Length: 351
Image (cartoon, rainbow, N blue to C red):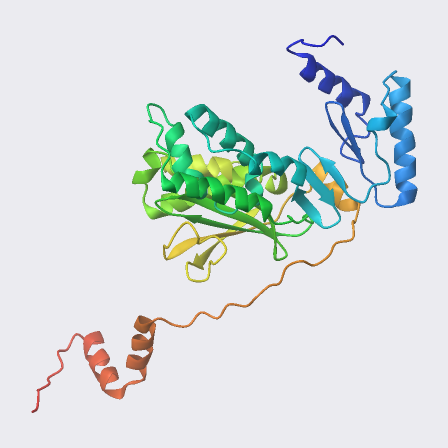
């Protein structure tokens, strides 16, 4: 294939998918000219290697031996490190971000944010942290590098160096998805058995700034559904609603097998960083086994527990303490009875 053709990458990708049609998402992942082979054990891996190399020979496709790597316990693929522990940021790719100098024009700000955003699933509150910089990328915005911009710039760099190792989820078990909304933006976290699978967040759009609380939290649910489509998607019969906003969000969530639960803001320590509201959403989603997820799950890679689950005890507020004390007070009980019977209790003030 000639170099420089506009449609060359798309055509080559189509050809590779056609060549490995029977093996794709079973033990092979292909991205243009990168081929990743994964297996449950060494015996299967040897057989999978033989199948892939044979398929390449049959179609007269050849790999350069010096660019190949075999029998790896850990592999770098598309800017990520894949291992039995989970998915991590590739340090060699992050180094480019860490060495990035202060952007001097808006174009360079966009370039930095685009590169950093590739790893936003690893960064908690990415959109909130980057807000001082993203505000300068809007139309007709003037370049003004403030202390807040410098703090955001350095914070994103630090976040990449301390990024978590994200869990490899078991798609046969339910996920916990925590969502929160505030005047600053939307945020959600996908968790699996106490470990983070991915973070997602975005700033509010102009029209969303006028949304009431319940619509903002519906928007957080919709954001969660869009971000985690591959884990949560399940075909289902559509339902009809009369509320325009609800129709929009129900159209997004109709393809998911999920349950939405009320979760007090004081207990929602996972997704409450953007907001200080009293309510937010917790979604328990039972995912459908997609082909790729199911095949990866069948590998049964050994995992190591890297997270701890803590039980939070929420103490009652002063208002709740007063209500409880009033119910136990005999004098107040008499007054309550009078209120229930719509009778005014007589009382006097003594010196």
